[in-house]
Length: 122
View (spheres, rainbow, N blue to C red):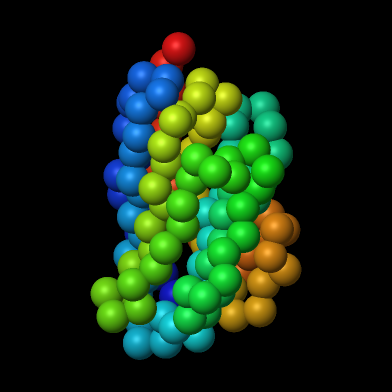
């Protein structure tokens, strides 16, 4: 089992940047692929980005490709999401997720954090 705690959300103007962090408990962090998902009010949860167990492969939703970057530090049990050129449509609760065998690109993951709010004003 893994417990995930997100941080770094907030209010930012369009065009600005934010960096989300997710700290994971446990000593088997490197056995989990990690992802970021988001859910806007009235919408279904959607896939944003994911990174493989070693960090060698990354995956992005088309809507964030070129603007967001996912990375991980296995020594610190932490995964990051650098978000640049933010748009109002990026406003959502962002969730960190973990799974030992995920379907990359899917919004269905085994473990979730509590979420952190990101609000982008126009």
